[in-house]
Length: 270
Image 1: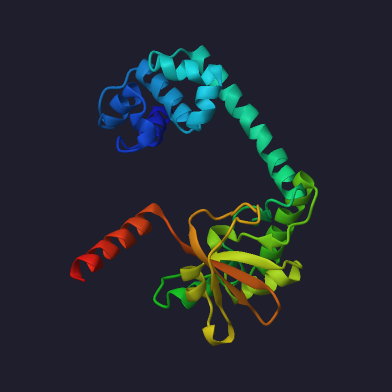
Image 2 (image 1 turned 180 degrees about the vertical axis):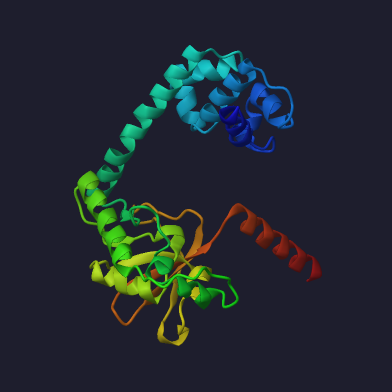
């Protein structure tokens, strides 16, 4: 019963999602209420379509195993899951070699993250949360765990080097969480730069007057792959330690939609 509830909660995506609408069967199942009647066949179809819908459409059409599942659409058997999961495993096994190939050709600069995805400023000192939100309610924790944060970075670097055969120059902090303490951790690990969200960075530094900024739009004209497709611009903030924090101004579909609406309203007034 617990597994069934888990499947119905997480695999019934919004009927508004385009990947759901590509299948009449998936759309039908996703449109049902969570407390509706679901047979074992329904749940099996939900399992297959949830996995299949997240596969790139070009990949699905080019792989006969996936194309056949899409054509079938419903009434899947347990044996139908095997080729789907096999195709997923084959694709995942190509990811790290492809990253290594791009880095070797100089087309992409790869980053790493702390090993267990900790929020580094909180790991070094939980009170650092008050820099961004002075009114936040925090647990009473007296121990500081800077050594744990250093260990998380070290483990992340080690895994990256084992898998990709090179040492990264930059770090993608977990959830882009940065702060003064993280700058020290990054320079201690001999990193050149780290990435953050522009808004997060602005709320994470006690003294913004000591940073300089220059804003440039990311460009792939030199053949280098842009790692942040949702960035409309980046800002580089060199610190006293020499580490550069690059902050992205996000350009999500929702943000672009709001910007477009504002532009149209402004045009109507002019």
